[in-house]
Image 1 (tube, helix red, strand yellow):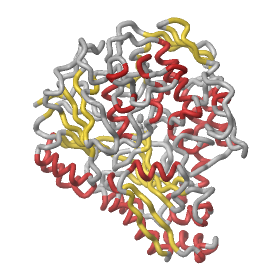
Image 2 (tube, rainbow, N blue to C red; image 1 turned 30 degrees about the vertical axis):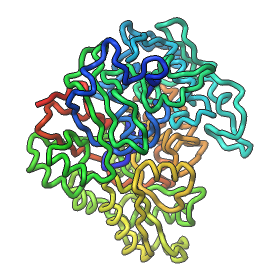
Image 3 (cartoon, helix red, strand yellow; image 1 turned 90 degrees about the horizontal axis):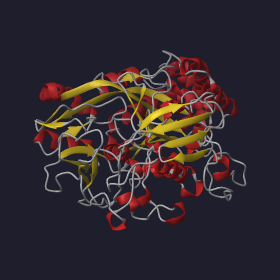
Image 4 (cartoon, rainbow, N blue to C red; image 1 turned 30 degrees about the horizontal axis):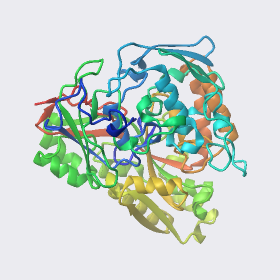
Length: 555
């Protein structure tokens, strides 16, 4: 899934790519089955700058995933009830939930005209799972047999994908292409949620054209990926330089033609600038609006304003191993949590369009429990101050709160800072990063020593997805460095249950352990607040915060 940069929250996410034109038919080539070309009037969609190049296994935030959602499809997707439905997969079967057989449908092709095969999935998954490739979604393959040999422990004995030790394998022993339409998967333990997991971005396939010899990805692949989805790249995208990602309709898409000729993803570092462009007709779709504009947007956009439940959750995080002193203390983290007036923040800052969070699991998926966080998430200034003082809080000179400024977080982060400052009587500094990509990079490198805002939107609809990537040892988005053997074992028990319903009780027990530690402090549950211009119609946004670009139309 996906960490989210804005008042949006990858999912997801939810939440992947192929080779370039110079390497045998890139995304922008004008081969048979292409759309109407670069001259087509595009539908313009707001995003932040993707953190990384457009590579499936290395996209762990919502803006990059939004782009990939137009370029790629995978084995499954999800229906309105958030249940997996087959897409490229014809069937996903197992008799013991450990060994799985995946059959593919005929007729899906890459943008270069070659067929989508089982080997494409195997090559993509092995590339992401191989530790030295340093892919963000590497951790999602830890349930595959043979993952440990590709990601050995480092000399310090810490778990998770590492770079120090030399792998003894370059491919997953539990993964193979039986034939062009059959994939065999063997997991390390029974996992009833495996088919649900396969809709996530990390499990998208990659074409043969994406690779050099010996499983290495072509260097320029991520700037001009060949996909298998309804749109294809019309020109390469250079991250850090280009302010748009351009694509046109792929008319050879098996599921039919998208309703519009072209898409343009416009990159913004300020949501208010994007909102002004939307009002002026220079932008067509925003899937989250600046909090201070929500009240006026309802009146101005009318039936072109979208408000609906989201799967996102917003946290305040602390690096509990290498952060500042207060970040390492569970009691001080809990005191900070109790000093925050969630109800007033969600009502005043977000115009009532957020809900105070009381769990790590979103209410939109099975496993959520109202009040699971208990007293630790209940606003009580007196108890917060007492807990703070009795655990060395008086020795804390200041608290830093970091956030990304391109996601309209200033108002609520300053409100949190004022709560902490007033109720704990400690100096608080609010520190903005210009881009979400920048703070993610610093978090990944352990450079953020104070508190930081973080958010998550589901990659796939399971309570496990709100726990393993965020709190699991070596988790892909475990920026707080939480590690608990009992927690990891409870997740495995939940995986091994006969069904998701039976596994929920184990996931909830793991959730209780994470809530007790308060490494991530739940602040609010998200609501989708979007709007679109009069230039388009039939705009829909799903709980993963993905825009349905296949069905959007020109007005």
